[in-house]
Image 1 (cartoon, rainbow, N blue to C red):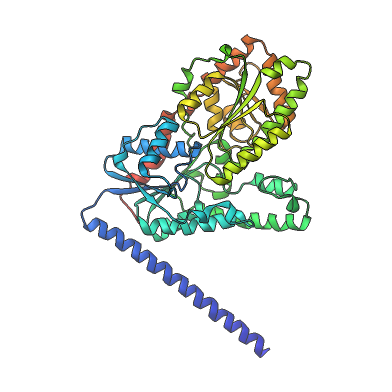
Image 2 (tube, one colour; image 1 turned 30 degrees about the vertical axis):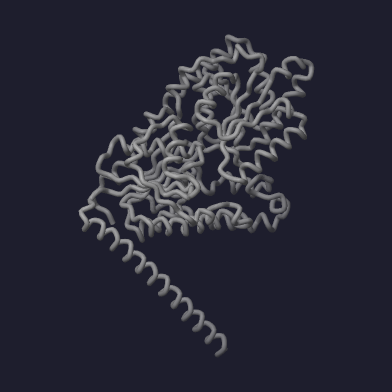
Length: 484
C-alpha cells in the first residue's frame, strides 16, 4: 500500500514538473515573439505583416492557384501591408517560383511586394515520414514547421492556404496573430471514418487493416480522438474559408463554428477558356483529357481501368476505339509523384493501353490550353474531390465532363438532370466507360447542348468571384486594429 502511494506521488510530481516546464517554455516563446514584434514597431515599421502559409507553393496544382489568386487579391486591395509566403521550396528562387506561377496559372503579380520565408523542416509534414498514424504524424510535424516559420517571421495576420490546422494555436497563442484559413479538404472526415468502419481497402486504409477487425477498431478509435483534437485546433481560426458545399458541411460538423465559416469557391480560369475555339473536329483522334496532380487520391488507375472497360464496350467498333486517346496531364511535386507516373505507365502496358494513353508531366499553361482545344471529353476520377478546379476548367473549355459522383462535382458543379444536364457523373470503371460511350454515340446537337450548358454554369467559379469572396472573409481580420 505504501509502495503504491509512493508511485502515485512520484507520478504526480513528474507530471507537475513536466506541466510547469511546458508552461515555462510556452511563456518564454510567447515573450520572445511579442518582443520581436514590438521591436519591429519601435523601428517605425507600422505596416501590417500578412503571411501566407503554403509549404508547397511551387507545386503547380489547384491549391497553388488559390494561393496566387489570394496574393493578387490582397495586392489589389491593400497598399499598407507587407506580404510574406512561408514555403519549403528550397530548390527554387523567388523569381523562379513567381515565374512558374505566371506560366502555369496566367497570373501576373507584383514581385516587389512579395517576400519569401524559406523553411527547412518541410520533411516533417511529408506522409512518407510516417508509415503509421500518418494523420497524427503530419499534424504534429506541421506544428514543428509552424514553429520554425513563426521564429523566422512574426506576422500580424497568418493565413493558412493548405489546411495545416495544427499550426493555428501556435500562431494564435504564441504569435498573437489573427488567423485566417482556406480549407480545401478536411484532414479527417466522416466519409473517411465510414470507409474504415466498412473495412474498405483504399489509399489511406491499407489492406491488412481493412481485413483485421481489431486493427479496424483501433483505427476507428484513433480517428475519433483525432477528429476531436482537429476540431479544437480548427476553432482557433478567426475566419474560415472552405471551397465547396462538401467541405463546408464537414468543417462545420468538426469545428462547430458556422458563424465564421464562409464558402468561397476556388478561382477557376473561366473567362479565357470560354472563348477558346475547339480544334477537336480537325483531328482524327478523339482526345479524352484528364487534368490533375499526380497524387494517389486523384485515382488515375481508375481512369486506366475505365479505358480498359471502354475497349470492351466498343469491341464491335474497332475503328472508333483506334481513334480514342486518353491524355493525362498533371504536375509532379517530387520523386514520389514521378515514381507514381512510372507505375501508371507500367499499369497502362499491363492493360495493353500503351498506344491509347499519353502522360504529360509539368506542362506549361500554353501547352495546357492546346490540350483543351483538341480534347472532346474531360475525365476526373477522385472520390470525394473537395471541389474540382480542373472539372470546372474543362467545362469552361467546352469539354463534356465525366466526374466522380461524390464531393464537389456532385454537390456544386455537375448537373445531370434532364433538361439542365451539363455533364456526367460516374462511380466505378464500368460506369465511367458507359458514360464515355454514351457521349461518343450521342448526336452532335445533344452534345452541343451539354457543352453550352456547362459553359453557362461556370461563371460563379470565376477568379473575380473568388477575389470578392476571399476579401469579404479576410478583410475583417486585416482591418482589425486589435491584435493580440
